[in-house]
Picture 1 (cartoon, helix red, strand yellow):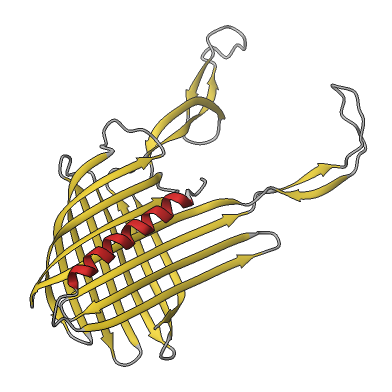
Picture 2 (cartoon, one colour; picture 1 turned 30 degrees about the vertical axis):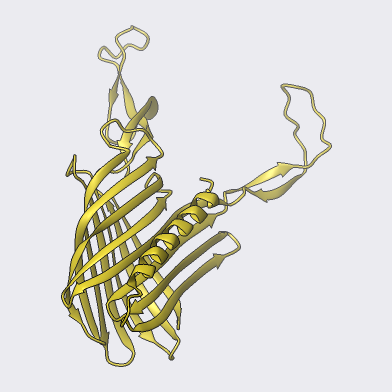
Length: 323
């Protein structure tokens, strides 16, 4: 699938403007500007030889903190490309008549062009403003794409309130709940799903520092269609980071992306059959096929529609650069 970088750029600009506008409202007299922080995760895998693959992972989280407000812009992406199978190409200049196949010819090895295997992107901008010590208001927008799950573009705008259960230097825990509006475009039309809908949103954010070098992080976002409660999606990540220096650390994370009503896709219908001859006399006209579980001969029965897998799990090991 071709990436629409113009759409991505527009969404980044939109989330940036949303966050900036909210930030402007946070700069009240007496509010202490704690400052900026940024963390960038990079992971790259490349193989050559019998298998040629390229996998690139990038995640950046930019934060701005005040005594009673917080702003965050997060950009997340994974892209993997795998080369096709090798094949032989006949050398140019060979002449032969139509319908004939030469007995002797020269060939050279070639490989099909690399194609995207995995393509996932996520951009989110959000702003939180404290109403009291344990209560806050938030607003934000997000865009995501998941090539394998069949999600071309999904835009979500959300706003709500939340509770801060813990907020210390070593431990923070908060939950948020509110309303959302979703606009999505999928690879296959599904009359049983809404392209646009109002929804309920639940957020959770957890951070725990254990000693000087170990950090635990968890975050989740649940979005539910208010008109059809079975149409919901979940994005949850659990991570462990180990500091190597003041600005460098290693991080392992496990992300789960769940769609309770996945996208439809076309699938081939195949049947394995065996020939049954009741009277044992070939050509008598009473022969018939019977489908079997194993063996037999494959027959093409056309195509049907099935839903994609509902759960995607992503395990990452990355180098984190922070300041």
